[in-house]
Amino acid sequence: MQPNQPIATLTDNAVQKVRQALQGRSDIGVRLTVTREGGDFKYKFDYVAPGQADPRDFVFRCGEYQFFINWESEPLIKGSTIDYSSTGMAQAWVIDNPNPAWDTDLAREISKVFNETINPGLAEHGGHIKLVELKENIAYVEMSGGCQGCTMADKTLHHGVIRILAEKFPQITGLVDVTDHSAGTNPFFSTPTGTIPTFKH
Image (tube, rainbow, N blue to C red; front, side):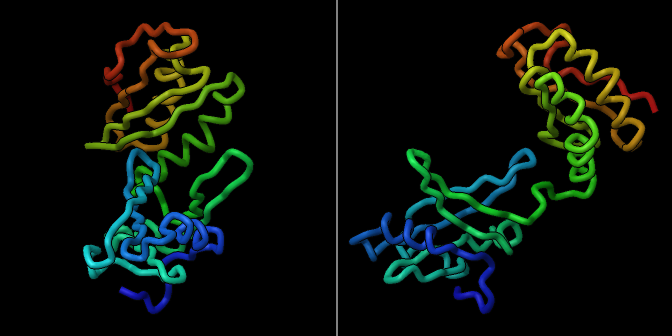
């Protein structure tokens, strides 16, 4: 499907990469599929024969070659700029995506509180915490950096994160830490991974 108004923009570098990848193979194209996972976008590039592509997929011409965007990915990629960066030994697709990575307002607000209220304090000690899933009003979180395996991780959860979430989001009934604390730089954790601390509102 040729969009009347492109759902995304391919930079000259991206077009050039497609042409390089398909050089001499105009019988196939490159397809991008976008999904949500744990508050992040996952981008999958694969090869597809134009005749085998879904007719609902969006098609971009790259010279004699074709670049497809999976039609189901439209709400997740719309308005994005798709680029390919090649600096020294580092080469990668770079996608500037303006769309929200979470699909619910509550998850977006919780993630915002982590980023703007909680993580600045943890960053002073090299730590970080993020929301990885929100299901049935239970927040699943993962610690990293200085918080992973830290002896203070339990205290951080019970006296910091839970208190803030309970104050701001009364609908949240529990919090599950899914961090693999045994893999931390200073592995010690007194609360088993996957336990649900009680919220007191």
